[in-house]
Length: 335
Image (tube, helix red, strand yellow):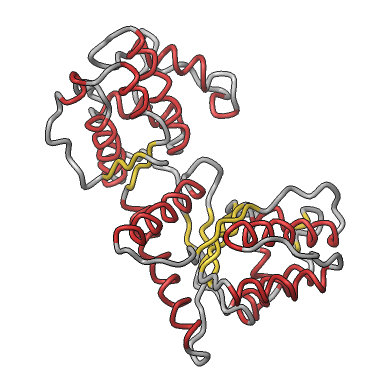
């Protein structure tokens, strides 16, 4: 379960954390989700796809629409899809809507070999497992990929499933020839056209686009790709600095501490420099520093805690390559 940290939400009682135990404060740090404006716009796009799918299931003249959400690892693509699904479940529960949940999340499994048939079977197996887990019990599942496809379409129609998130779609691409195989293209077209399911394809930018380049017919079923980007700090574009500071102000206000000044420009720049502006790295760094501060019974997160967290979480990774620890005492400043 995600803890939603909304950029439009202010903490009404900033001292509330003082009433919490250490365990309660730690729990608040688990699986946070920052609904910043980029993600908010994508939530609206996914909502629209879901509505299209419901109409398409009742009216054959109405075509389901699909989207692709692309970006580098760590920008929040997977977290967004899981948050959307949790929000949809909560809404269905609050509205008292019975019946099975009409949405799926499937991660494309890594292929053991570059053979297209292996990738095809792996994807079909993952899709069938997800559909059957939602409400069906496996009954003599077919072996051939052709029969598995027919069986999958029947299950999707019987469920019915309106919207499917397909994560790690870059794994469908043969990296040597930068193409997706014709059988995989056919499977995606069958899911959207025959089963009348809207899809949200999630993958790495620069690696997933060949799915649409290979098949213009499939591309027509999708809206233009949405790109989710890291946060950028560019003094020549003041709006980028404001966006970074706004994000960090939201995080600062939602943490179980007194205000730590994460959003002040000097500290905000250090955090963006350290993490490359990737939301996943930002949260990992802040969680590590915050956890240490809670163990030490501190009321704010100090720069010392961030220096320790940087060494533990980032320094030895690709994100720390050719960087200095920006939180250590010294003359580090904005470049």
